Length: 191
Length: 93
Image (cartoon, rainbow over all chains, first blue to last red; front, side, top):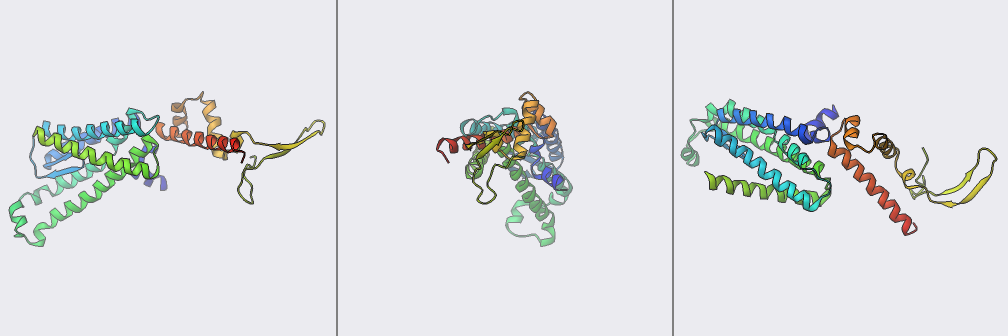
């Protein structure tokens, strides 16, 4: 039971490298496809609901976010850690995104109920609490799954680089922030 | 398993005497334990398996059912322990 729980928050003790990348890329592709049908787009830690984009855009922004995180994390590992293999960073970071599949599923399930909501009316508070229940549910689910994803990304960084303690935590926060900023800048400059 | 830490104060133990089972000769002194003997049982088992796997971390990972970086991290921790022990020996602790 304890081992099963460990697999949920740190599968990288058992699987890393190309194997993790293979599993992760399949899950991420399914996530993108489900997200496309539920009008949910993912890039880095951003999750945008209600955006209807093309297939190519949905896949491009998803994998751009992944690539930016992998490159920045690997560059950090080269500077501050020893013996880090590129395939371990690539594999663990890709697999760490598996909670997004659940976000995509929630988005698909609640998408139709959230579709009639208008952003302007939302700002003017013209909806009742019951109208907003799907949006609240999606918001709560997203927060939970994104926190889970961040915990997995941290374990991916820790296992792949063997960094420990405060140094590991601070570098991870820096990697996460820089990846997020770079991805947002790239996405906004392209689209 | 050879004890390497003092059960009273957790300091590093030293070898005081060695004896020959054949003739009963006893060698008395104060000798440092070899670094590998100062590692906990599971680390010693890890090193034995590592040598048996011809030093292949990939084979070790397969054998232990762990990922490659996890096994490499375990090895790094053992290396760190050995280096610390060697430092202690150098400064004569």
